[in-house]
Amino acid sequence: MPVEVAWFGFLNVYLVFGERVVVVDAGYPQSTGRVLEALEREAVRPADVSLILLTHGHLDHLGGARQLREALDAPIALHRLDVEIARTGKDRPLIPTDLAGRLFLPFMPRTIEPLEPDIVHDGELDLAQFGIAGRTIHTPGHTPGSISVVLEDATLGGDTVAGGFLRRHSPRLPYFADDRDALRQSQARLVKEARGTIHVGHRGPLTRAAIARRFGLQMP
Image (cartoon, rainbow, N blue to C red; front, side):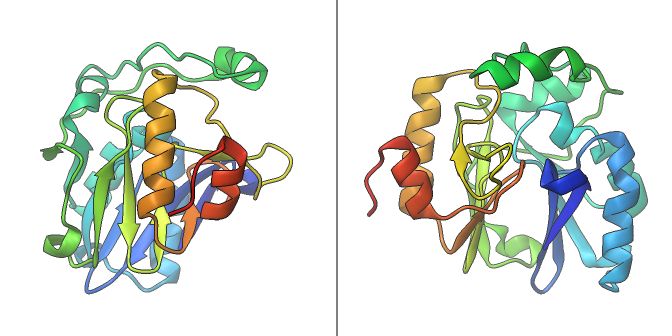
């Protein structure tokens, strides 16, 4: 279930339902209220939430994690290669992929209150231990520690790919990327291993076929 924490899906948090509930990403600190409201609408109690799973360490995805942990008493999981961002509270240098990224760059918050993740992992997590039928896969490139979440009938791609600024279901590069070569390899892995619709951090959702066409990738 998507929770739009910015207008028109420009920033999304996701609720994943199973035997328990996993919150994927946390938005900015000011996003916490919208996430908690969405949980309340779905009659989800704090004790029902087993995990706050961050797809990567950029502040628009981990900024609200501290507040969510305090409200839900659920652990935060983050890939070890992005942990330094959380521990220092300082974002990595943002490398724009195009003009839109360069235009957004001056307006991006760059610091938060530092936090220590409860679970530091290498990108390949079995989510059964948190009551969800699914797993994470390491999809670096946007950041070194970026992951995607593969469920039985849907996939959460984080910022491995984004939806279009004007056409939300049209794939585009994320606005920033640390390593473009690694990002392309991760997009290929996402197309290969994804299940169902691909939900992303910004705009979307997207289809595997649309992503493959946009980036010249082979469908499995």
